Length: 208
Image: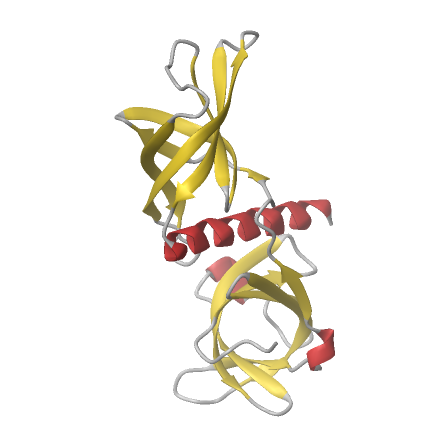
């Protein structure tokens, strides 16, 4: 599935371990036009022939394709021209609810300042003090702070869940608590999904 006009995208420069954000300005028969990133470190690397990997999210799925820069427009607002891939060259990465990534996010529960160890669309694992009173089967509510994919600012995501596991980790003097979401709004859950996709993308970049 091709991205839509005004779709937010992530650009990975394949010859460097660098990435930036942009958006789709226009989709033609043979090329895709995108806005030029404002990052000064990136602009100098975006010359004709530069190989890129483009990724974007539609619904619960992530899509990726590889392309290269074929030029720039001469409009009032210059745009980058990318070679348009064949639709069968676009890779679809279906989201699974149990995909879990390590992520240190701030979490507030009953006034307690906590941090997550890992997170998925279905729940979180967080650590707390040994004497914290979180019991298996208990329903708790709180606020998770998730970085917005576009602005990088933290957005508050209200959550409610059931404690499914509470384990003592005496070697580090902490307790690990696994919380399964029982109530979360779909737009808020999508913010978590996007965050998980972004963490997975960062891992892949490091593995190259």
